Image 1 (cartoon, one colour):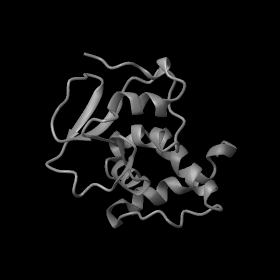
Image 2 (tube, rainbow, N blue to C red):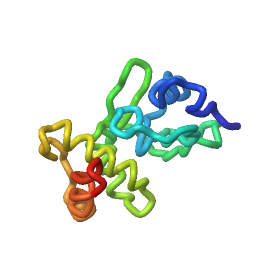
Image 3 (cartoon, helix red, strand yellow):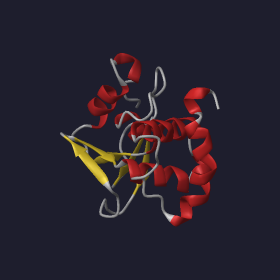
Length: 146
Protein backbone atom coordinates (compact mmCIF):
# COMPACT_ATOMS: atom_id res chain seq x y z
CA UNK A 1 0.00 0.00 0.00
CA UNK A 2 1.25 3.51 -0.84
CA UNK A 3 0.74 6.64 1.25
CA UNK A 4 -0.42 9.91 -0.28
CA UNK A 5 2.20 11.89 -2.24
CA UNK A 6 3.44 15.40 -1.56
CA UNK A 7 1.60 16.77 -4.62
CA UNK A 8 -1.62 16.63 -2.57
CA UNK A 9 -0.23 19.18 -0.05
CA UNK A 10 0.88 22.79 -0.02
CA UNK A 11 4.32 21.79 1.31
CA UNK A 12 6.43 18.70 1.86
CA UNK A 13 6.48 19.50 5.56
CA UNK A 14 2.67 19.37 5.74
CA UNK A 15 2.71 16.10 3.79
CA UNK A 16 5.30 14.48 6.07
CA UNK A 17 3.48 15.67 9.20
CA UNK A 18 0.20 14.19 7.92
CA UNK A 19 1.67 10.82 6.92
CA UNK A 20 3.89 10.06 9.94
CA UNK A 21 2.58 12.43 12.62
CA UNK A 22 1.50 10.50 15.69
CA UNK A 23 3.34 7.37 14.57
CA UNK A 24 6.32 5.94 16.43
CA UNK A 25 8.64 6.94 13.57
CA UNK A 26 11.49 9.44 13.25
CA UNK A 27 12.02 11.21 9.94
CA UNK A 28 15.57 10.82 8.66
CA UNK A 29 17.69 11.59 5.59
CA UNK A 30 16.09 13.62 2.80
CA UNK A 31 12.72 13.50 4.57
CA UNK A 32 14.29 15.08 7.66
CA UNK A 33 15.95 17.78 5.55
CA UNK A 34 12.58 18.54 3.94
CA UNK A 35 10.84 18.66 7.32
CA UNK A 36 13.57 20.90 8.78
CA UNK A 37 13.14 23.08 5.66
CA UNK A 38 16.82 22.77 4.81
CA UNK A 39 16.01 21.20 1.43
CA UNK A 40 13.09 22.32 -0.69
CA UNK A 41 12.33 18.76 -1.77
CA UNK A 42 10.98 17.34 -4.99
CA UNK A 43 7.66 17.93 -6.74
CA UNK A 44 5.39 14.92 -6.40
CA UNK A 45 7.61 13.34 -3.76
CA UNK A 46 6.39 9.93 -2.68
CA UNK A 47 9.33 8.39 -0.79
CA UNK A 48 9.77 8.89 2.94
CA UNK A 49 12.77 7.82 5.05
CA UNK A 50 12.26 6.99 8.72
CA UNK A 51 13.78 5.25 11.70
CA UNK A 52 11.33 2.72 13.08
CA UNK A 53 11.17 0.03 15.72
CA UNK A 54 9.28 -2.24 13.29
CA UNK A 55 8.31 -2.28 9.63
CA UNK A 56 5.13 -0.42 8.80
CA UNK A 57 2.48 -0.87 6.14
CA UNK A 58 3.48 1.68 3.47
CA UNK A 59 5.59 0.46 0.55
CA UNK A 60 6.89 3.96 -0.21
CA UNK A 61 8.37 4.43 3.27
CA UNK A 62 11.95 3.27 3.78
CA UNK A 63 11.86 1.87 7.32
CA UNK A 64 15.35 1.75 8.84
CA UNK A 65 14.70 -0.64 11.72
CA UNK A 66 16.50 0.10 14.99
CA UNK A 67 16.31 -1.57 18.40
CA UNK A 68 15.55 1.72 20.14
CA UNK A 69 15.57 5.46 19.54
CA UNK A 70 18.00 6.09 22.45
CA UNK A 71 21.09 6.70 20.30
CA UNK A 72 19.25 8.91 17.79
CA UNK A 73 19.30 12.68 18.31
CA UNK A 74 15.82 13.82 17.35
CA UNK A 75 13.44 16.71 17.83
CA UNK A 76 9.72 16.44 18.48
CA UNK A 77 7.51 18.96 16.69
CA UNK A 78 4.03 18.41 18.08
CA UNK A 79 3.22 14.82 17.13
CA UNK A 80 6.06 14.48 14.58
CA UNK A 81 9.60 13.30 15.34
CA UNK A 82 12.55 14.26 13.14
CA UNK A 83 16.29 13.72 13.43
CA UNK A 84 18.22 16.85 14.42
CA UNK A 85 20.17 18.59 11.70
CA UNK A 86 23.48 17.28 13.08
CA UNK A 87 22.13 13.72 13.23
CA UNK A 88 20.71 14.01 9.70
CA UNK A 89 23.92 15.41 8.18
CA UNK A 90 26.09 12.78 9.90
CA UNK A 91 23.75 9.94 8.89
CA UNK A 92 23.83 11.07 5.26
CA UNK A 93 27.61 11.52 5.26
CA UNK A 94 28.08 8.09 6.84
CA UNK A 95 25.98 6.49 4.10
CA UNK A 96 27.38 8.78 1.41
CA UNK A 97 27.32 6.23 -1.42
CA UNK A 98 23.52 5.98 -1.12
CA UNK A 99 22.87 9.62 -0.18
CA UNK A 100 20.98 12.15 -2.25
CA UNK A 101 23.95 14.46 -2.85
CA UNK A 102 21.76 17.29 -4.17
CA UNK A 103 19.65 17.34 -1.00
CA UNK A 104 22.71 17.17 1.24
CA UNK A 105 24.57 19.90 -0.66
CA UNK A 106 21.56 22.23 -0.65
CA UNK A 107 21.05 21.68 3.08
CA UNK A 108 24.72 22.40 3.83
CA UNK A 109 24.53 25.53 1.67
CA UNK A 110 21.39 26.73 3.45
CA UNK A 111 23.07 26.14 6.80
CA UNK A 112 26.22 27.99 5.71
CA UNK A 113 24.40 31.11 4.54
CA UNK A 114 21.92 31.12 7.44
CA UNK A 115 24.88 31.06 9.88
CA UNK A 116 26.88 34.05 8.65
CA UNK A 117 28.79 32.05 6.05
CA UNK A 118 30.02 29.51 8.55
CA UNK A 119 29.69 25.81 9.23
CA UNK A 120 30.38 26.50 12.93
CA UNK A 121 27.73 24.78 14.99
CA UNK A 122 27.63 21.62 12.88
CA UNK A 123 29.14 18.73 14.79
CA UNK A 124 30.62 16.37 12.22
CA UNK A 125 31.91 13.06 13.53
CA UNK A 126 35.50 12.14 12.71
CA UNK A 127 34.37 9.23 10.50
CA UNK A 128 32.42 11.70 8.33
CA UNK A 129 34.99 14.50 8.16
CA UNK A 130 36.45 13.44 4.79
CA UNK A 131 33.09 13.49 2.98
CA UNK A 132 32.14 16.74 4.71
CA UNK A 133 35.35 18.45 3.63
CA UNK A 134 34.80 17.25 0.05
CA UNK A 135 31.28 18.77 -0.02
CA UNK A 136 32.00 22.10 1.68
CA UNK A 137 33.15 23.92 -1.47
CA UNK A 138 30.15 22.72 -3.46
CA UNK A 139 27.83 23.81 -0.66
CA UNK A 140 29.36 27.29 -0.48
CA UNK A 141 29.01 27.73 -4.24
CA UNK A 142 25.62 25.99 -4.56
CA UNK A 143 23.55 29.13 -5.16
CA UNK A 144 26.22 30.66 -7.37
CA UNK A 145 26.24 27.70 -9.74
CA UNK A 146 29.59 26.58 -8.29
